[in-house]
Length: 172
Image 1 (tube, one colour):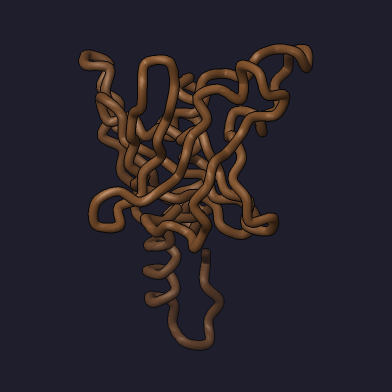
Image 2 (cartoon, one colour):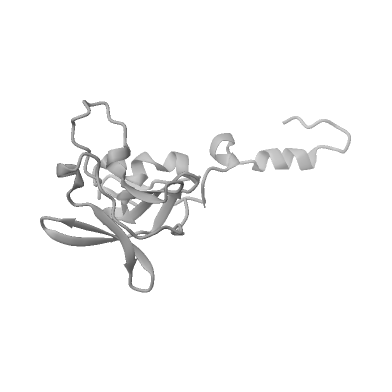
């Protein structure tokens, strides 16, 4: 995960199947001092969501915006790096319902980074969920997955290696 926006064209993303999925399509674009935003258009007008983080990069970029109570929400559009085009995030998810089932709204908890995505995209994450306020203060040490994510901290290994006399095999 990174706080960098990919070199992508601005444009609209349209849902597959048109109709209700195509309504409210989002338009990635610039807003104030090159800050990136996603503009959601719908029956209630237009709403802007700032893009704070990009997740992915080799094939697809997904984008996160801060919502109330510390939630980091996956925005409704993603960018296909190879095709150089935008698509609706919710249309791309596999769902265990019939194919005619409507896509989940992008604000669904399934698309909340703090609860669903963090384990595969950042290292040494602390969700810091507060049940009494139903809020998050999520932190992580670095984007992507590092060695400690799977193997735990290496401090004990380093200490044992330093204390092992030259020529002897470490007990680790």
